[in-house]
Length: 121
Image 1 (cartoon, one colour):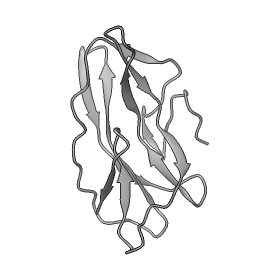
Image 2: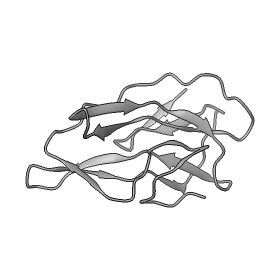
Image 3: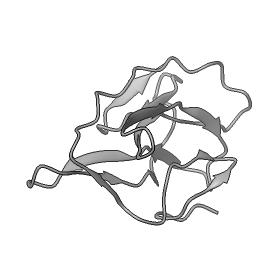
């Protein structure tokens, strides 16, 4: 089960959400433009990668995207994103499932990056 704000280490991947907010004074780099491998099974949804903060390393690290089974039909994944709070701090917002389709009218897959932009593949 997906719960925003909780740490999961299951089929949805490592550390895409945490029990406490992450706030740092270092802006994350721009998202990496990933080229997903072939869809492993019908109905799978691409969960795009995102920048996470590693306090032990003192820097942002890329968490690669992966294919997953959505919690229900008609949803797509919005990866975690970073927002400036206006005080020189960047706060990581948790990833979440939102209403939408993972294919466009032409049958192409698409997924959102952490800026909320769709990428087609």
